Image (cartoon, rainbow, N blue to C red; front, side, top):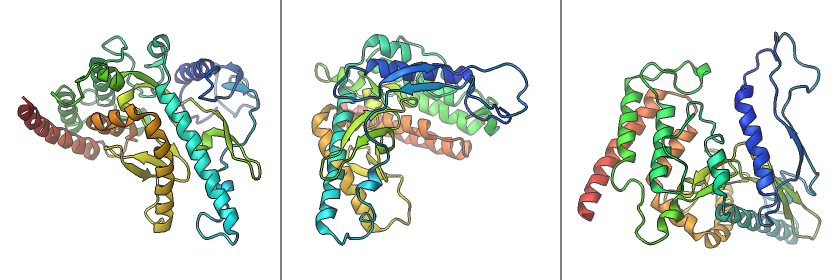
Length: 360
């Protein structure tokens, strides 16, 4: 269509095929409910001039699902108005709070099951590279495997695809940004850092390495907005399906993100301690306390079910910081952003060097 500014068909096609493969993979997995995919078609880019908006859906990507019981975005419906001021009906307020706790516990159990799901190697090797949006990440230097060496190669490829040679485009082409000397110097520092002793944890106990680097399936946008939930008066709510896997990907466990999105993002910090994100600066303190309470409920259920996830987060905090910094950059101020990241890398190399000497 005229002035189209989305992903081209050549990028949409593999993502559509990946999403369809996820639904098929999890179709019979009882602990990870997904929508049942009945039919799908990949997008087709028609030739010819784009002079007017199309009047039909010819060529559009299309997914048809069996209707699952429930609705999405029911979080606010669980507690209308009580989120910001006390309810006149105290019993009703307790009922709504109980509903929220039940939903968070269910979501945590599903998230734990997804993290522990034994992902077939054939699926991981087929879809790991395809499932990433990074525009410059087109190949990997090593065969895909659940090892520390491969995780290092993945980080290296992410750095090289994000920051290329001086003068090359950086971020999306429409941003009209190029790699300058500051970003290029930061790239060299980051590459040295990921190969430094101690940057990625090594196996000290039998099986520990595989616990850190086993390949897992991530949803990519796990939250209340991508769940079908049944809700009936005086009955507990039930999550009946998780959908919208198009931003999903295959990732080493050490880089997995346990985020759960509700009103705020329920997250953990680098030490796997409870935290919240996507909260406005002007949010009232009572609201922040409520969000932290939700985080406590969610991770209080998740972490005992998947304790190896918490250990991986703590062991890989340096790699996670770098990975998320590269993943979340949106193209603004490459000089300032990567200049700061390069300085962080230099500091960490000095600290890791000292730690390594002490350890030896």
